[in-house]
Length: 119
Image: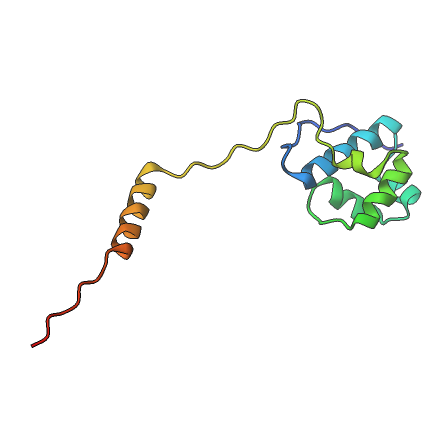
């Protein structure tokens, strides 16, 4: 007997559609009590493909999103809807010193070149 499937352990970033899709598929699959193998069978996809989609390691075609949604009994767009409480991923901040250096380089590049006096 296989172990009972467990749901997602963390919310995905709301601006990462691949993670949102993986979260929603796994959540719905676990709510139905289905294994990845069962979802694969119901949707006509390979189990390893379903596993990769749930791990956010593969891109997925729209047709396959539709197949998974139909198997799970939901509209395809709901699989791409971020769950309540999901927030965008924090943006990496550029260190202030890098900005200053870049500004100086840009200023130097914009400086007009004065013509050389003719002899």
